[in-house]
Image 1: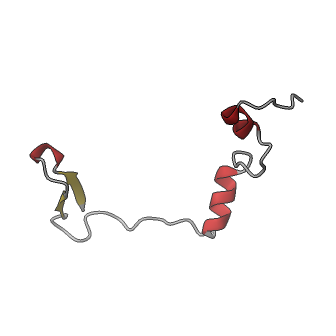
Image 2: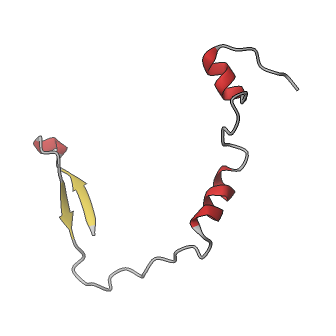
Length: 67
């Protein structure tokens, strides 16, 4: 399946085309880990979990603790 934007036609929709043969593409190999594990693996060390996080302090113009 392929979805193509129709914005150039000033239409807020997509044109959907399907493959000629159902088995033209192999089935995807989905991860076996639970979603929560994938999220933690992807975002560990990148999440804002405290009000005194450096990113929040920069946004509000507060002093940051330099370590």
